[in-house]
Length: 479
Picture 1 (cartoon, rainbow, N blue to C red):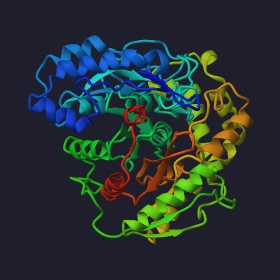
Picture 2 (cartoon, rainbow, N blue to C red; picture 1 turned 180 degrees about the vertical axis):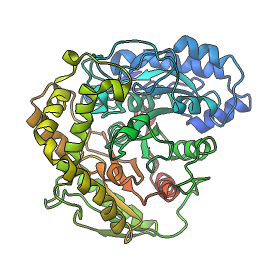
Picture 3 (cartoon, rainbow, N blue to C red; picture 1 turned 135 degrees about the horizontal axis):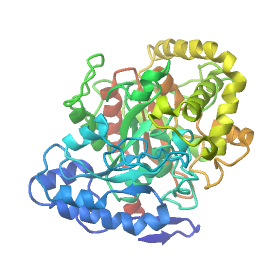
C-alpha cells in the first residue's frame, strides 16, 4: 500500500495481513517449523509484496522467484527455515549475474554461489534474488546508472542510503524480514539509519574473509545482514558461527537481553577539531539516547572527538584506491574484465583523486594501521562509543548523485557520514539502531561502536535499548 502524510511525504509499505504479517525472521521460522505457516505461502506472499512495491522502490536488480518457489516446496531445515531473503548484488549466487551496480560488467550468470550464500542456505533461508547497490559499493546513496535510483520506503523522494540500499529498502518496507549486506565504511549501518531498521557490522572476519579483502593491505569489509529486530541480527550470528567460527574471535553465542554490567559509554557529535556538525534533530536525538542509556544504569559522559583530523581524508584516499583497483584491475579483483568506458563519473573521479595522491599511500596505510591502536586505547577507557550514524536524515535522491561534480559530492559525503568508518578501520563492531524520528517522521539512526571481538556485549545493549524504546515500523506508521 502507499500512503501520504500531511507533509506530502509519500511512504511505501508492503505490510499486509498475509503469512508474513509483521513477523521477524526468527518468528517466521518458528511458525514454519511448527507447521503453523507453510513455507510456500511465505515465499509466495513475499514475492507478492515485492511486486506490490517494486514500481515505487526499484530495489531489486535481478529476481529468482521461480527458483524460490521451487525451493519452498522442498524440505527445509535450519534456524531460519523458510525465511525469504535477498543478496546484495556483489555476492555471487549461482545462476544469477553479479553486476555490482555497474553498467561496465557483462550480465553473465555466476557459475557458483559464494560460501556466504551457501551458509544462508544451510541456515534454511530462501533467496528471492539480488538487491540494488551503487556502482562497486563506493558511495552511500543507491543511485546506480545501471538500474536507476532506489527509493526510501519512508519517503520515496529520498535515498535509502548505501551501499546496501536495496537490501535496506526491502527489509524496511516489509518485503523480507532480513537481507544480506556488507560494510566497508558504513554500507550496512548507513542504509539501516536511513530506512529505520537495524544494521549491525560485526568484528572484522566474523563471517570469514572476503576474497577481495585478501588482496588489499587493510581489510575494511565485513559481511552481515539488515533486520527489523535486534533478535534477528543476534540469532543470525549465533547460528552462523555454528557453521563458520573464526577461532581468533570470542564467540557470540546466545546473546543476553541485557548487558552483564553497567557499561561505560561516551558520546560525540563532532568531527575532530570541529564544532558540532549534525542537524538539530539528530543532535537532540543523540542527547535523548545518552539520557536513555543513563536511565538504564550505564555511565555516560560526553567527549570531544578524539581521533586524528586527517583520518577521514586518509580513509578517502584508501577508499579511492579501491575504486582505482575496480576500474583498472577488475580481472584480479572481480575475476572479470569490465568495460572501462562505461564506468560511472564518480568512480572515474575517485580513481583520479587516488592517482593524484598515490605517492602518499604508504603513509596513509601506516596511519590507518596505527588508528587501530588509537581506537583500542580509547576503548580501554570506555565500553561503547556513541554517535549519530549520519549527520542528517536520508537526503533527497540526487543530493549524492554519482554524476555530481566530484568536489561537491565529496564535501557532501564528508558532511553526511563521517562517523561510521572508525569501526571499519579498526575492525571493531558497530551497530545502528532506529531509536528516533525527525520532525517529518523520518528515521534517525544512533550508532554504537564496541570493542574488538565483543560483539555480544554490543548486541546485549541493543536488545536492552530496543526493549526500552521499541522501534517503529512502517506498518505502525500506517495505522
